[in-house]
Length: 338
Ligand SMILES: [Zn+2]
Image (cartoon, rainbow, N blue to C red; front, side):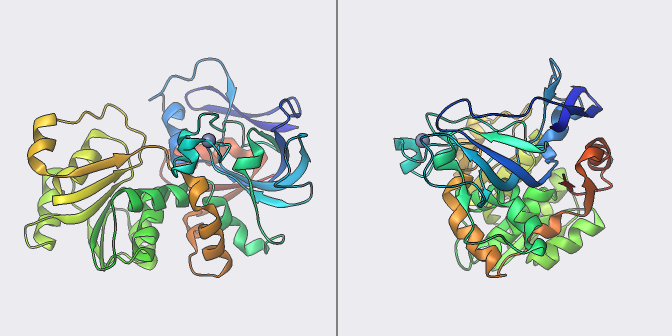
């Protein structure tokens, strides 16, 4: 089979790779139906994370089960399945507490921009849809593997409640999905920070009520102005930079909460500032598995359409161009079709 391999920053190639096979009795092999490039794939692509040895890429997937190991009974060959970017047995104590992304058997997916993928912990990780979904639903179902589930977790971690005011920092796919999540969880006012017109439009379409184009201290001041000088109840930090975290914490009211889901890069938290701010913090890799049944149903019912974050589609063999387009911000998110 063939798949994407990163060799160095800016150098992603589509190459012949070994076919994945069942290694553990808890594995499954899926044939990829659609996959994509994630904003977090840009960290190594931009050299902000070391690449090391050439290695496969991709952690988002939907597919059809080809083969299952002896211990996998929850899905069977031929079924259409979705799974999280972090695999889980869905039975350990962390899983039962709703933190499947911290499962004691967790393995992060990392080979999904390929024609076939091995899924460890398949029993607890994969969720089958009732039938093969219609073609037009594939992009939205694919977002549930990561970005929509991550936006959902950001809103839950920030404790978005009916009638509340939410701020979304970051206008990438996760931030835009965070707008959907805040709306679905009942936020009355959703302030999106974005200065990029196509992303602003999508944020408004997804339910944002206000846009803030300023950044840094000006951005914080503008959010305060919009909230009677108090700050928001909930802030969804969907970037992972020091500036984004500072904006989220400082724009949140005393007693409010920040959900942070951007993978932190050089982010430090000032203990004194946090202490006196009375702001609550919760973040981490999203327990996407916990939300999959609910989010799949919302997509199948036509209630949410997060697949609109894909504004660029390519055949999988042109994956390198998919990275380039996102790196240059010509695309929000690239969908790849094997
Ligand atoms: Zn577990």
